[in-house]
Every structure is written in structure tokens, then in C-alpha cells.
Length: 326
Image (tube, rainbow, N blue to C red):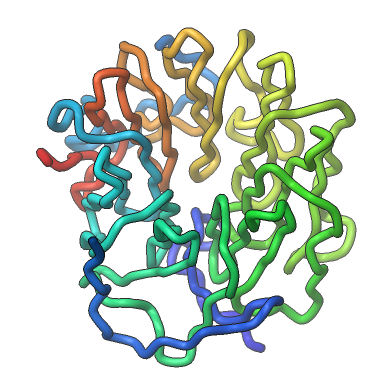
């Protein structure tokens, strides 16, 4: 199948365009409404001369509403304490309740309360009209440009989306998490034994950076050529392209990571946030305070603070760094 154009250029945080499943499909037509149902920062890669926009100064939303957040291209979505989703920037709010949400370049996708996958447009309509969704139930989801992967409840990985001329199937075995690069070209996952596995979906043979040995808790792929992961001891290891300093993480221990376009952010074990890599729009300058969740997007990032409020920083050209009041 011919590749569709990438709206973010050659490297960007992906689209959740779901069109083929390795385990069966369920088709839904386009336009069907979603059904309602009962820190300090290192200076790595900094370039402070670029425009910052309103998001350059962190903006905080309402109190006590949110538990996790995911950022994509010019928009973000957050899971609320009642399991509904609130979106801002270029995205509309979906109906129903969810377990988690992952935002891409043209659609956000979420796991409903029953573990099934659904995606929606900027109007809140279901993505469909020939697109297909994986069957079965999932524990987690990661979207990249035109492709997505998820970890099923039994630990196996399923990937789907627009195929390339040469596609490697997900490796056998069981995983605890999976993450796609910004272009959706190669995923990496953490196996249940803590080792890392990466596989090629669209890149030329031999172009995927080889992961290090050891045991890991999570992994996050940056751009098309860099990867960072949290080791079992909480330290961060990065490898691959380091043009913007995105493969030079700070010292210390972390509980989670999220990668944007040539930058990454992590929540330290003390709850503060550190970001590294490209800082053209202030996206690598997080606010002070303690956080429970972080989501890095296209030149901006958002986080959930310990009190349940949302804070965003970086580019705000589409309102993506202005979180909702409710």
C-alpha cells in the first residue's frame, strides 16, 4: 500500500489510523457518533531563540479531575477520575468511559472500560469508513503515524495500521508494555522478563538502533532513530540519534517517561519532572512541582500534578498548552 503523507514532516508524533488487525477486525463507518455509556531541567539540546507562544509559560487547569494525560500533534487528552476523557487543542471529547488514552497526529485512540479499542476525530466521531480495529481486549495502547500497537490482556502484542512494503510482525512472547516511534516505523516493547525488543515496521533494514541488555520497566521511542527506557533500578538509558540531545538523559531515578518530537520528559521518583532534547518552544522547560503522569507531544508537553491538576508547557499555537477547566 502507498504511504500517505505525513503532516508533521519526516518525523512527528504519530497518527492513530487503524486499518488492519493481526487478530480480526470490526468495521465501523466514518461519522458515527461515539456511543455514550453508563523540576529541574538539563539544558541538553536547548534552543531558546525560537517562538514559545502562550504555552511557554506553564498553564494549569482545574483541581482534582485528572489521573493521566497523553499529548500528540496540536492536541492532548486526559483521563478523568470518573474514567471519561477530556481533550483540548485540536481534539473533541469522546463519549463513554475508558481505561486509557493515547493521542496521535490525526486521531486519539482509547481503550474502553471493556478493553476494546476505539478512535475518534476532531469532531468526536468514530474513525471508520473502511478502517478496522483489532478484536479482543487490551491492557495498554500506543499510537504512531498510521500504525498502532497494543498489549493484550494475555500479554501478547498486536500491531495494525497502514502496511509498508516490508513489515515485521511483533515478536512472540509476552510483554508488559509497548511504544511506537513518532513515525510509527518501529515499535519497542518490554518483555515480561524485563528485556527489550524492537522490530522494524517501515524503516530500511538495519536502521533500527539496537537496544541495550539488562532489565527495564518501560520504554519510549523518540523520533525515528532514538529510544529511551527506564531500567529496573530507575535510571534512564538512551541510545540512537542525539542531534538535539534527546539521547542524553539526566542522572537520577525515574518512574515513567514520555517522548515527543526530538525531546523526552520523565517523572522522577520524587515526583518532579525533567525534560531533555529540543527546547525550541520551551517544551523541555517543565514547571516546578510534583507530578504523577506526563505526556510529551509535538513541541509541547502536559502533566498531571499530585493534586489532580493539569499543567502544560511549550508551543500553544492551537491551544494545546491550555488544559481544560473541567
